[in-house]
Every structure is written in structure tokens, then in C-alpha cells.
Amino acid sequence: MTRSEGRPGRRARLTAQAAFLYTGVLLHGAAFLLWVWFSLTVVYAPGVAVAPLLFATAGATSVTWLQRRRFAAYADTAIPHTPPVKAPDAFRRAVGRLRTAAYWRHLGYHQLAGPVLGVVEAVALALWVGSIGGITFYAWYWLLPRHWAFVQWSDVDGWKMAVAGLVVLPFLPRLTGALLRLESVIARRLLGPSRAEELARRVEDLAERRAETLAAADAERRRIERDLHDGAQQRLVSLAVNLGLARATLTDLPPEARAVIDEAHREAKEALEELNHLVRGLHPHVLDDRGLDAALSGIAARASLPVQLAVDVPERAAPAVEAVAYFVVSEALANVTKHARASRAEVTVARAGDTLRVRVVDDGRGGADPSGGTGLTGLTHRVASVDGTLAIDSPRGGPTTITVELPCTLPSAL
Image (cartoon, rainbow, N blue to C red; front, side, top):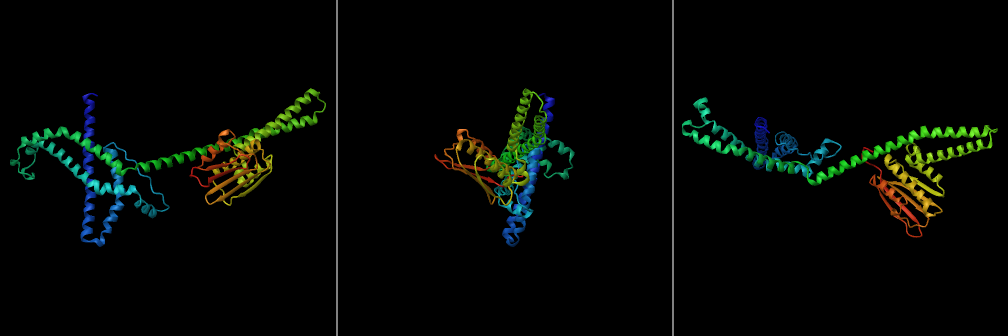
């Protein structure tokens, strides 16, 4: 950096330091005077001491905002905001704010640490003014009228003032910079969020982002299901119908041609059946229209073994939760069919308060292991995606019971 480039930077830094000290004296001085007012009121008029106390309490939020702006503008220090109090109305938010540790940290900064820091800032500012005034003493001596002076000009040794200013002034930028760094540390500790509050806010942000991701994935599954249902599925239906008509009407074709048409018709129907399973696996349309009872009834009807279904959900849960419950039952019954060697199954879905409980029981051989690659690991991950829990009780010889509990209400993004 050249000298011409460094001077504006140093000048700007010194100006910021001076502004930081000046605004700090004003803000901390105001808080100190308010504290003195409250103390005198408690001593001499305790009956009305609540007025300055309420004023100090209400003004703490505004002064905190001003201090954050001051540190950001003049000390290049960003002090994070503390998490806001969530309440349905302003009065409850104010009362809740009084109960938080953050509020009392702020009040302690303004009423206890603030006056001390204000005195230190006033001393630093006085050193700046005194040093510059001492260096320029003779200029003030010749420019100002004698009756404007606060001291007798003849009693002051100008050269001593100038020397003192020249000695002290070079150290003031570093001292002021150290004071700014010290105050920044104190302000971040008292005006910013604590470690626990930062972690709580981070957890809340992660939960909201996860909810947005789940909502986007669910919307994408719905779009794919709709596109397949309205596009490829309808084309396959039309192809199967046309091949069936060709097989029924074109009776005079050679046997080789009829065999090709029969094979194409069979494959079209198999492809249509596979696509139907795929569409239901992505997101069943009936789940959005008619809810869990109708969607699970379809699963039970298509199962290859008798399934007893009981659904008691007087109030619908969040769409993402209903989708998880649907896929839990679907995958659990698929596992029963493939691995359990069961003769029957029982599915119970009930809502208790804000919890949706899903229970799948079969009379198979038992021994289900989530780490055995039977699809239970995928169920665990799907349930955990909405903060649900999954428990498996599957002793050797059976029966196997899968119990899932899901929260009915999720963040607004879902």
C-alpha cells in the first residue's frame, strides 16, 4: 500500500474511532443518568420508582438496537440478534421478553457495564481532545479572544502542552483500537445471543430448511405422479385397448402375426400394471382426495393375504405425515408378504392428540431385523424425516409388531 493510499484509510479509521467514542459517551451517559434517576427515586420516592424502572425496561430494546448499529458502523462488529419471543399478541411478547436471559443480559450491559465503559470512553475522548488541543495550543492562543478561555492563558505553558500532546497522540490510535476490541467482545457476550441460544436458533433454521426440502420433494413426487397418470399411463391404456381390438377383429392374420399381437398385448398390460404400482408408490392420488382411510383400504384390498384395517383419524394430519403413514403401511405389508410367511395381518391407525400412531401386526415367523435389508431401514429413515419414531418387536417365531408414532403438526413449510 502506498502512502497516498494509506492516508485515506487511516483518516477513515481515526474518524470511525472518534465517532465510536463520542456516540458511546452519549448512549452510556444516557443509561447512567437513567440509572441515577431510578436510584434516587428508590431512595426518596419509592412509591413512584416503578416509573423509571418501566422506562428503563422499555427503552432497553431501543438502546440495544442503537448499540448494534454503533458497533456495526464504527467498530466493524456485527452483533447477532437474539431469537425473538413468539407469542400471539404484543403484550404476551413483552412479558415473555422479560423472562428471557437475553433481556437481562442487555439490561446488565446498559445499566452496569455501560456506565463503566462510558467513563473509559470519556477519558479516551478527553485524551484525544487534550492532545490535539495541546499541539495546537498556540493557534488557539492567537485566534481566540482572551475572555473565551476557560483558563488563564498566562498561567499555561504552551510548550509543555504541545510536548505532552506530541508524546501522547501517537499512542492514542492503538489504545482506542484496543478499547474498541474489548468493547466488541463485551457487547457480543452481553448483547448477542448466548451459545445455547445460537444452537437453538441453528436447530430451528435446520428444521425449517429440512421442512422446506421435504415439502419440495413431496411436491415433486406429486408432479411426477400426475404426469405419469395423465401421460404415460393413458397412452399405455390406449395401446392395450388398440392391441386388444386388433387381436379380436383381425382374425384372418397368419399365426405368426397373431402371436406377435398377443405378446404385445400381454406386455402392454404388464407394463400398465407396473406403472400403476409405480404411481401408487410415488404418491397415491386418493390420499389427497379422501385421506388415509380410503388410501389404506386400497392397500389392504390389493394385499395377497387377509388384512384387518382399523382407521380412527377424526382430524387429518399434515400431508407429509399422511404420506409417511401410507408408505409405512405399504412397505410393512410388502415385507410381510415377501418375508414373514404370515397368514394374516392387522393394521391400526389412530390419532391421539397431536400424535398419529400406526401399528402393523402379522402372525408370521418373526425375526425381522432392520439391518437385514428387508426395507425396514428405509422405513426408519422415512419416519425420522418427520421427527417420528419406529419400534419393531419381532421375536423368533413371531408375531411381528411394527409401531410408528408421527407428529401430526409440522413446521409451516410442510
